[in-house]
Image 1 (tube, each protein chain N blue to C red):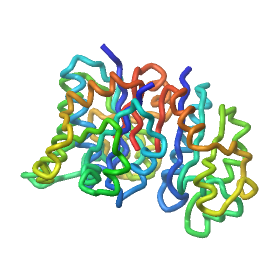
Image 2: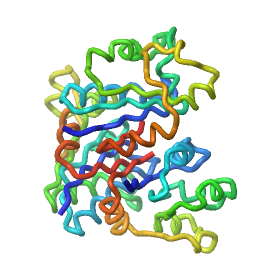
Image 3: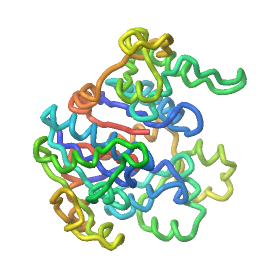
Image 4: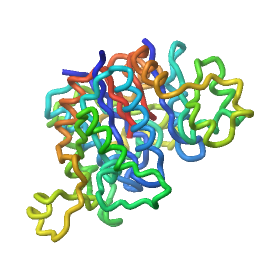
Length: 94
Length: 129
Length: 118
């Protein structure tokens, strides 16, 4: 069972990422979108996400000028987001 | 081909919920997937407000929704009770409630949460924004 | 028929999330879907007794939780971790929800067809 966890707000805006991390499974994917991409700059949250399949929305990274800082993370476009939606059994938008 | 239902809950200005939902919907249609409908619930109903008037150099989300609906015949459905609470009414709603103005943009239609539920029942995936 | 989990993760009354989540849950139950209500994080506060939301201009949707049995929802789950975090236990709740740990909640999230978070 693979779940795509779609997180749309930064850790200081809401408990979305914290909640997702409580229920994430080993085969799941964490997708950081919108302000959530900033979580990948923060050691505390990087540590919490360590070991999970992680990707970021490319447009959100580039819109915020974070290409250099976040270059080591997998970044996807909307076509890939659609594909992930279908290769996972469900999407939870936290 | 998979059938998707898109749920939009963020308001039209400020949060990027509507923009993300639009990009996802366009990508899904371009990939040949079917969009059962885009359902607007909670603050998402403000996306259908015909009076939203962005500056000329800003993104006009409403225009983008209208283009998608026009090009792909994707139904755009508001939760009627969420819409009324946030001041979005069709001409019929305004008459029913004794209001003088109405502001539901075409081709949005009013529906109930029942339509979201039956949509979920028929779709392969729900994706919320 | 689909199995739908509706997650309450925000405090009541500060916004309409809890009320609108409940509206959807009851509608889905009325349409004979298998509905699971899951309360986590601040969402567990939706289930507290003695609330008086009308004092701050809000509708008392909390009363509806007491009558959940009328709607034939499949389950009502409350997070043990979250309850404990607020120093609460089951006796403070208006509905006899099933107290579950995070592993059990994860299992339920796997079993259902769709999960909607409010």
